[in-house]
Length: 78
Image 1 (cartoon, rainbow, N blue to C red):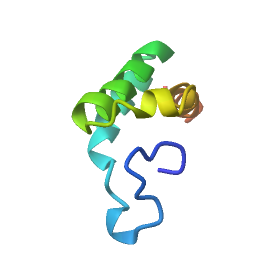
Image 2: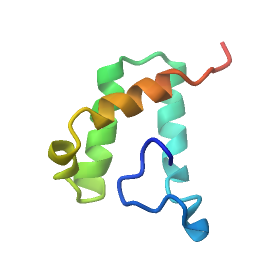
Image 3: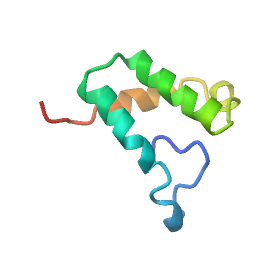
Image 4: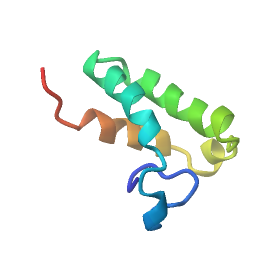
């Protein structure tokens, strides 16, 4: 939530689990070593289509790339 918070709920205790439903999808992408662009595309879909925030992609250029890099930096079991 510190790196990716498209709806701006970081710091609201009641929303601490707001993005937890996406963990499984991203874990699968990471553990199967999917390309960075696939992660970026998934994030863009979630923001633009699922959450209805397509403007974020243009307002925050490079943000999803930063998020994808942060996800790729998470150590996972092999």
